[in-house]
Length: 292
Ligand code: ADP
Ligand code: MG
Image (cartoon, rainbow, N blue to C red):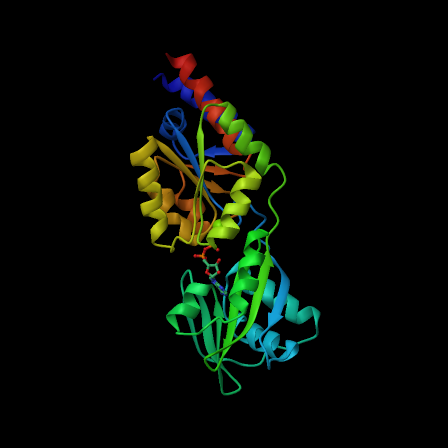
């Protein structure tokens, strides 16, 4: 490879807001067979909003939302911000929380006003031995609409099924279609609910959806794509995406994402627009064509 073409290519990339960390990254992207995406904050806006809160028998709306907001006030997760914002809009002030715990990829818990409050995915409720009862069906319906279903439990009893929805980024669907036209396979890897992820994957036209992956499981998911389909680029924005970004043949960070993701990546899409991946693949192909 001639150093001059690589320099011209990375320079052209910089003009387009595609920051290649090393010239080698520009060369390597040409060989990609699969582009795998994180969901939240990468293909979706990353700013979910509360859409539904269905109460179990014997629980009150303000009481449950207040208890939920109290524990979520300690979490940095986008889901937590959605629930806090909803409480705030209703003028509910989160109470102090004690013994706060977070289980990565599951949810949060704490003691609020002497009551144990647990908020998170169905798998967290299963871990805590909490029966979902009639709310299991309600949550399944919400997930089929592409919303993320969550549950709140108070003192060991299911209190509510909650849903948050995160809009798909403008241009995400076109990005996936353009990658397919370039002959690439697409995948989405997410910790979110399977039915929710399937709905979003179908809406975007993504080939392979891997859902309900624990944070430490993203690496295994990328390794499996590499084994099954060949060279794989992974696109992500979160702290929990960093190991997968490091594992993939090409790690691509969303420029609006976390510092850890940006520092780990081989390529940074400055604008945060996933369409940058298409431009980057085209640029790498053009560059390598000039070299050969
Ligand atoms: P993702 O970034 O794809 O949402 P995570 O591993 O961060 O993946 O989270 C997986 C799931 O765990 C979320 O979809 C949500 O159901 C649940 N979860 C994680 N953090 C929280 C939280 N702070 N409050 C409620 N649920 C949470
Ligand atoms: Mg993300």
